[in-house]
Image (cartoon, rainbow, N blue to C red; front, side):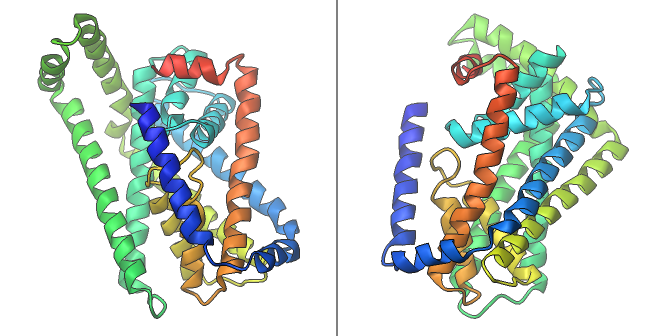
Length: 331
């Protein structure tokens, strides 16, 4: 099944790349890449790792009811998970993070995964909040009606996914026995062993939801989410400066939203294709030539991809693990 998903993602990426780069002037694209001021990559990379550090601190607060974990272990887990998303199919990084922290800190991997789900819900609802603000209070450029419709569609899909995940968490938290009965009903016909292990995992998963009982933890996690996405928007602004563009706040936020919604599209690991098209065609709305917009998207993607992937592999090596072992553990 995963091989089919991988192939579908690759086909979608190829189609999007073809549509994005079709008919452009390659000489102009290369000229824009040559003329960029790559000095700005230094603060951008620093911001990327700062955002990873903030994610680690936020995750630490969510894990605190289970176990107080040191920053370095959390930071390692975050970097390895983002690296896994960059090189492995079907967003395996979320599972990898739970596996790494569970293995290194001797805590339940299911409980750890529950905190990852809660964290991702914070990201999802924060992005939805930004989307509501943009569509309500920010005047979009002329000719952006199709783009606005795309944002709305992406927003509805995100809302549906987040809403469904939130509902499942509430049921597991408040109606655990009922949820276990349903899970056992569907799994027992296939494997009694699977049913038993699934029941144990659901109980452990519930332990990871202890964080939602603390209003203080929830408030702190929400504030960290705002800061994480704010500095990401600032990195987009800095990348604009690298290409001689002084992007407005609204333009930077629009690029951010486009990226967040584009990476939901099935694609290759690392979101190659949808990521570039999202950045480029958002900038085109602000009368930026397509060649310059695409060159910016290439550099911005590489700046986010390469340092995190390298750092993630280094930390994976430190744990004496390989991608093959992680895939086996995930199965």
